[in-house]
Image (cartoon, rainbow, N blue to C red; front, side, top):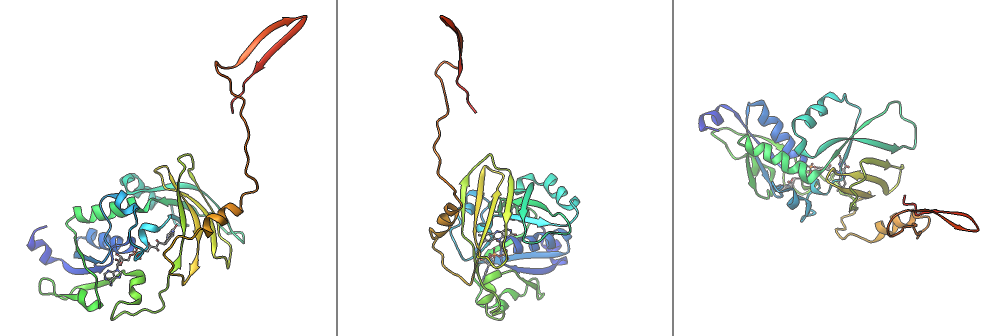
Length: 273
Ligand SMILES: Cc1cc2nc3c(=O)[nH]c(=O)nc-3n(C[C@H](O)[C@H](O)[C@H](O)COP(=O)(O)OP(=O)(O)OC[C@H]3O[C@@H](n4cnc5c(N)ncnc54)[C@H](O)[C@@H]3O)c2cc1C
């Protein structure tokens, strides 16, 4: 982007580089009317594996399942899937159990968030977006004059807004979510059961790369960063029995032959399901 072009655009500073901050930054950038800078303490990597390692609990995005339920027309997201399959966003068959019947059927997208973050960042950077890794103590620090103009500041700090000077939004609070990531390439349906007033949700979210998120908890105001064994025990509590069976297998394949020993005897066995 040339200096002259940047000058003709209005400066915007987006604080936060989670899914919300990067989506805001990319959307504003795509209008062609804004010179966008992102400032954030936690910044995703262009390498989705690094995002998947989830080194910090200070932000939410890399930890999300994630699935997205929509009542919107399908057309918008169909476009996104067609244009950017590498974004980690896909339609999925969804089964959801509600406490009360719904008027209409939602449809589902599954999002591989580590991949989606890398995609969002890549799109933003490729179009000339600027990003600064920095922790702000006060929101006014984001309003440094750019090209002689006071920028518009968009605050996308999520839980950070609670302690960010000048914002101090004490209405923000954490809802702790603990999940399991497992390998299960055969799962391609997302299944959810959400009960009212429950701290536990039951959900299965395939991520499109062979891995599946199993959840989870929904614990308001809990900041405990340690993964407890409670969730695993809860999942195990759904188990009715632990089973061992023996499939009839046979070296050399099916035995199918006629033998005579006074009467005919037909052997046919070895069945594999
Ligand atoms: C276990 C779990 C499962 C979830 N599952 C789903 C799901 O299935 N579907 C769904 O839609 N959502 C799900 N969510 C919720 C979803 O992850 C969040 O709503 C979303 O990621 C919030 O994005 P964000 O960009 O607002 O915040 P964050 O990702 O938290 O990003 C905040 C950004 O602000 C920056 N920041 C904060 N304070 C400062 C500061 N002082 N100075 C500079 N930068 C700062 C951070 O560094 C970060 O870059 C889940 C969340 C969890 C934890």
